[in-house]
Image (cartoon, rainbow, N blue to C red; front, top):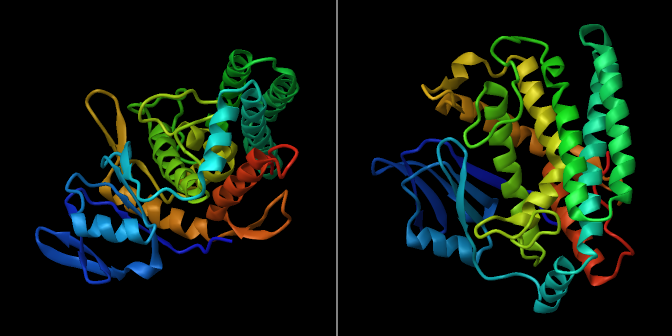
Length: 341
C-alpha cells in the first residue's frame, strides 16, 4: 500500500522552487521562504508562473515526486512526468481495451459510481438537515437519479451514456442552492460553469476538481497506467482522460461535500473570493490558503473502502481504485469495482 506522505502546495504566484542538496527549497524574490527534505514529500502542486529549477525537476524525477503546474486561479497547465512506471504489457492491454467495445462497460462503471454517490450524498444531507431544506425537491431528484442508475446499466453505447449522465448532472445541480445553509446570497449557485467559473460555488468546485484530478492522475501513473487514455472521456491532446474518468467516482464524495462544508461552517466567505469585471470568480490568495489547509487535513480522514473492506486515508482512495483498475485490465478481477459509498 502506498504511504500517504505530504503534498507541498505553493499558493503564491511569485514563489520559485529550487534544490539545495537533498532539500526542496521555496524562494520568494531570491530569499528562502522554507525548505523540506525531499523524503517527506510525494507531490508538489505549484500555483505559480515562476516555475522550478532543472535541478529540482531532476530530484523529483529520480524520486517519483509528482510535480504539476497550475495558474494562480487553479487551472491545470501541465505536469512533469519522469520515468514511466509499470510494464508495457499492462499499457498495451489498457490501449486495446480503450479501443474495444468493452470500453463502454468501463465507462458505465465510472458514471454509475458518479450518479450513485451523488444520490447518496443528497439522501444523507436530506436526513441531516430535513428541517432546513425543501424535502420534496430532494425526493423528486432522488426519483430522477434512481431512474438514471437503471438507464446507465442498460446503455448500449457511450453516446447514450453521455446523454443519461448529462440529465443526471442537471438533476443533481438542482439541489445545490438547498445545500447552502449560510450566506445564500454570496453563494447562490446559477448552474455549472467553468473556464472561467461564473459564481462563487463554481469557483470553489473548479478549484477542488483541479486538486482531485492531480491526485487521480498521480495514482494512475503510479500503477503504470496511461492517464491520458480514457474509457469514457475521449482522447484529446493534453487531456488526462483516464484521470477524468476516475474523478467522476469521487466528485460528490470528496469535492462537493468538502466545498459545502467550507461554506456552511463559514470557513470561506465573500472576502475570500475575487469577482472580476467579466463576471468570472476566483479564490484570493488567502482563500486558496484556507482551502488547501482544510484539504490537507481532510486527506488524512480514514474511511473503510467498500470493496476491500480496509481502512484507508481519504486521499489514498484514488490509488486503491487505480490498483483495482489495473487488476481488472489484467483479468485478475472479473470486472472493475467502482468506488460506491
